[in-house]
Amino acid sequence: MCPILRSFRRMEQAGVRRVRLHDARHACLSWMANSGAPDTFVSAWAGHSDLSFTKRFYVHPDPQSLKVGSDKLGSCSHREPAR
Image (cartoon, rainbow, N blue to C red):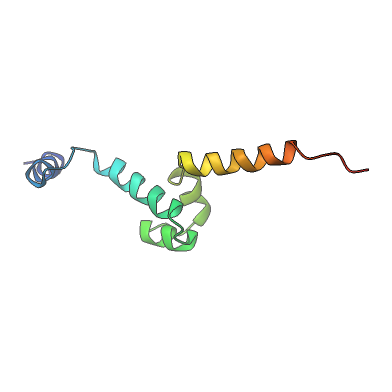
């Protein structure tokens, strides 16, 4: 049996949703980064020698992080001008 089908069978036996292993890896790396794990740790865990590669291709902001950034930007635009 091919490794992909074997992994899908194991996911089914474990009662978890079937996902491609690459997608699970991507989600795990993003979760670690957004949970505060140091970038160097995430990159090393992924087996990457180049930290910028990990950040560019695997780590994405989650909606909560985007909201925090948006709120900060909004608070900057509502300040009174300096005199």
